[in-house]
Length: 154
Image (cartoon, rainbow, N blue to C red; front, side, top):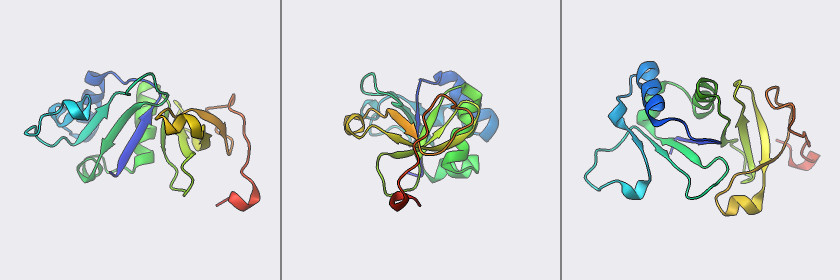
């Protein structure tokens, strides 16, 4: 997967489809909304999938996509997350590219972003909970900033 954007809250499915169609030319029926296991084997392959959480998980709504979504949007994962966070007023998490499984890039509703640490124990259960930021994020002034130790920077 090229894209795996975790949203803090549900985005209205029709509004998401409309946005993807208007801004990127993705047909509404090419955006599957629902659980993967509910799709039938003969369904056409979607350009993007928007999957609800299993339970009441933090950042449990996930937009996934592959090369078709990359080609349609012309944006990388972070930039697409910024666009959607601003449009829908919801925070998002994307992989920060590090080797640390508890580090993510938090995208605020204003589009600002920065690296954060999530609760490892909750994440093991699929629940992404932001513990603190590793750097200041202008759209998240309430979030405590705890820089990583010198040996873990990079």
